[in-house]
Amino acid sequence: MTFDAERAALADVVAIPVTPFTEDGGLDESAYRTLLHRLREGGVRTLTPNGNTGEFYALSTQERRRVTELTLQEAGEWATVVVGVGHDLPAAVEAAHHAREAGAQMVMVHQPVHPYISADGWVDYHRTIAEAVPGLGVVPYLRNPRIGGAHLAVLADACPNVIGVKYAVPDAAAFAAFAHDAGFDRFVWVAGLAEQYAPSYFSAGATGFTSGLVNVAPRLSLSMIEALRSGDYPAAMKVWEEIRRFEELRAADAAAYNVTVVKEALSSLGLCRPEVRPPSSPLGEAERAEVAAIAARWSI
Image (cartoon, rainbow, N blue to C red):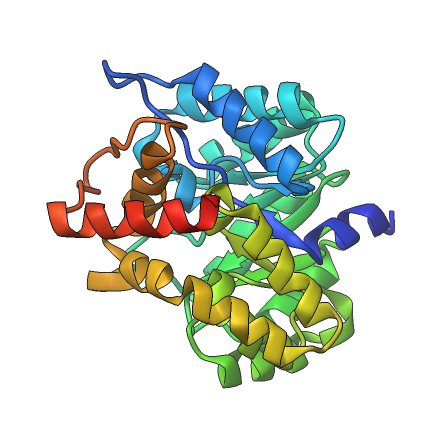
């Protein structure tokens, strides 16, 4: 398989939908459907349910399965769906099987959360998942600078369905070296640190970027990628300046409020409740007001 359609979908704005909660703390399926429809109307065509902005690690297994199913039910005809999988290896494989059965085209494998990760172990973890779903595209989510490009090349030699990388190490030079060591033309390179880092990563060869901000303002995310595709970096940097403060609020305190800021913005627009699950926490009053002001400006 060449995975041409999947590769094209990764070279785009890869939206990470939030997971809305009801007042009693359960999944708000109605609000989730509304947010997906809004992304569709905004022009988004690639979705990653169960990503970090979707609070992957705060959801139960059943909730993650339900989010996958809802996404495929609502977006399967208009979007390419890249389901986030991870946790222990059997759970990740089971989630990948479920994603395939639900109709997803790809899985995105979260960086393994473990106190003892070796590069060879990283390869083995991803190889086991990729071999379990040979018909799906597989996208490692790389946050660990200790993993080198040569390790990705070994993985892809064994598993040709590893077709792209969500690279989220905050170092554009490291990204460039990693991509060239892995074999630049073998993969689709997705800037995994969203709009704030997209211009620098595109200058080193990325062709897509992930986004949580797109939940709030699809127009801005799509404007940035169009500018980057055309090589118009001044236009891309105008968008960067527009979204800068919002992304700074998300990145503050080691990204403690990454999801909270997005949900607070959506809440201010009447689209979902602002609650996040521990270990995330609510914003302070001053930050809430600032986020609401930004969202109101973008909605005009």
